[in-house]
Length: 258
Ligand SMILES: [Zn+2]
Image 1 (cartoon, rainbow, N blue to C red):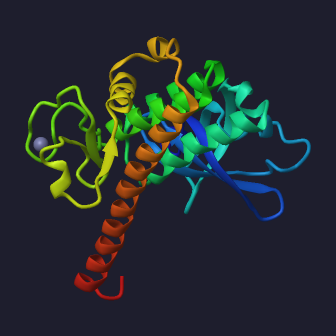
Image 2: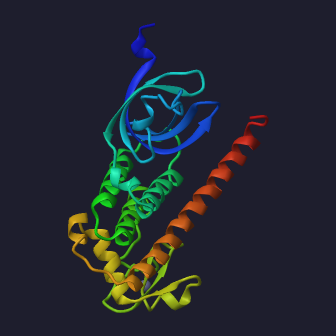
Image 3: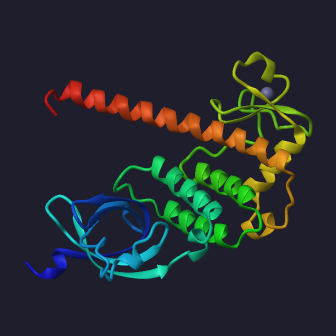
């Protein structure tokens, strides 16, 4: 067979890495046109490795992969964008890790989604140049929810469908958005959502990163947005995990022994 059938080129970001054997590493990558994949970087932990500098966490790289029996092997790698600022200080690194972990948690292997790939690149770029890491994290979380199909509904009541009026509201992670004051009290597990807070969320959801960069948010507003979005993300992730476990069980029950 010609070599081209065994070798393919990808552009990807390093999401995760763990050591394998004496000097190798298994990398989890998110690739344009492929989605999440795992590959082996052989000898990458040796001091003289020429690949090591191109395969740091959060780096965007151009890779040549060779098909292996279980895992594909990285044969060549070149940095596209190192996102140096993300390794410059602990705070940036923690935020970058959060961005990458969220994307990792919401995706399955080999489930191609270029919208998510582009969002990841944008997200890491935003972190490198933003004046406010917290606000940028909320902005990314809203975009991510959007890209994985869980965009919070902030303009219509998720119970009655009424257009949301400019007053204090309620919010439900389970129902996926804002509940108007007429419907809100009748539903359990809702939380109050002040009008000012709703306006901030709407602004983040509907404006470009460059526009949002001009927005000054108090730490109290940022903290409340963080609680609300993290409750929403956690709710969807737990539901995903439950359905994955359910599917696994279903597979086992219909095809015993698998
Ligand atoms: Zn309503």
